[in-house]
Amino acid sequence: MRLGSGTVIEVVGLGDAGWAALGEPQRELVRGADLLLGGARHLALVPPVDGQDRRTWPSPLREGLPALLADVRGSVVVLASGDPLRSGVGTTLVELLGPPAVRIHPAVSSDTLARARLGWPAETTDVVTTVGRDLEAVLPLLAPGARVVVLCSDGRDPARLGGLLAGRGLAAARLTALWHLGGAEEGSRTATAGEWADQDAAGRATPDLVVCAVEVPPAERLAGAGTGAAALAGAWGPVPGRPEDCFDHDGQITKRDVRATALARLRPTPGAHLWDLGAGSGSVGVEWCLAAPRAGCTAVERDAERADRARANAQAHGVAPASRCSTATAPTCSAGPPRAAPPCHVPTPSSSAGERATSSSTSPGRPCRPAVGWSPTRSPSRERPSSSARSDASAAT
Ligand SMILES: C[S@@+](CC[C@H](N)C(=O)[O-])C[C@H]1O[C@@H](n2cnc3c(N)ncnc32)[C@H](O)[C@@H]1O
Image 1: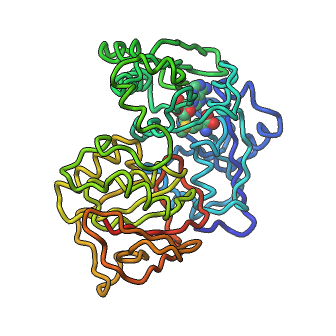
Image 2 (image 1 turned 180 degrees about the vertical axis):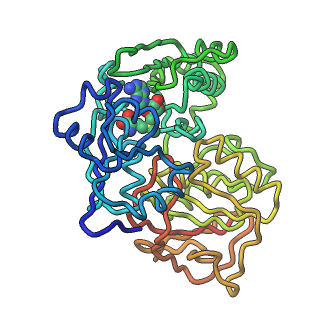
Image 3 (image 1 turned 90 degrees about the horizontal axis):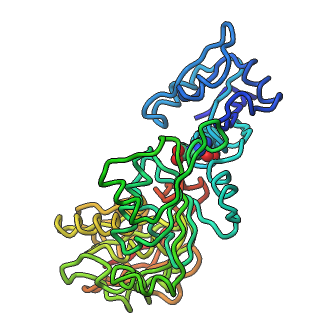
């Protein structure tokens, strides 16, 4: 969508200290806005202004924004938390309106504040948002010694996260919940994932405005941490080739060495998209998504039970939003693709940039033209995808 020419939406990030911590230039913007948009919590943080039109976000946000912004007149200021481009409304506005129509005024983000409290450098810490998503999104980032800041949906999440980690053999991981960072109510609690899991069982919660900082013990300490952690060892990291027993399957699974070889040939890159026709257990799509940031997969599986299993495998590995499986019969080469994807492929050493293909299956894919195009569509991903182009590849499994 487009705004009137020259209209720029100012997006002002607020910390937990609200108005008191806002700089004078940003205060001027807020006071002078004809239309002030934000969540109820943010609107309540700024003093009233006579005659100012104040509105809360439509729900669902992305669908409701075009109507809300369609007849914008005068100056528009949006209130957001922290850095509006960190899992925030700034990202949505830039995607909808384009960068020239949105000016971002960031405050310090919650993950930066969390790292500051713990002394964790940005270079050695990953950040993942689970706001409105499965907590499993943290799983691809876990490895011996890993540090991950997890943006949470609410105050039950720290205990739930503890339960998730403990259930995956990481009861010894250190989990710090930090709430109301930068505000008068700031607080934190550090315990092992196993101890947090007990809190979950007891239904305990922290305040809702909370992030978690997870630290996985180094490999030598994990080695003695029990069979769960030992089983994880074969599944760490982005490199494809996980053992078959990392996936639920009925025998229709691409064997690990074939999977590793096929994916190595396909060369997943950040944001690249795979079409997996005949997904079986979904292991190829899962490993594609784990292999590169923001990589996505559209899988097709004609057997409904297997399609369910492929979805469950994607969820169990924390890539459910990125790897989607439909129950359908893949089109034949002559029938054409369901989207802009090539219908089936065999490995082609000649495949070049933007053209990646494999047959990684228990039953070989039907050879046909190895064409893979650049797709304008976006991929659902762990972090919200950028609007940049990405390449498509396909796997006939
Ligand atoms: C939708 S994300 C937006 C993040 C925000 N753009 C930022 O830069 O921090 C909201 C997440 O940030 C967390 N959050 C925001 N402010 C916080 C604060 N002051 N202390 C702790 N967590 C905070 C929320 O609990 C939630 O997990």
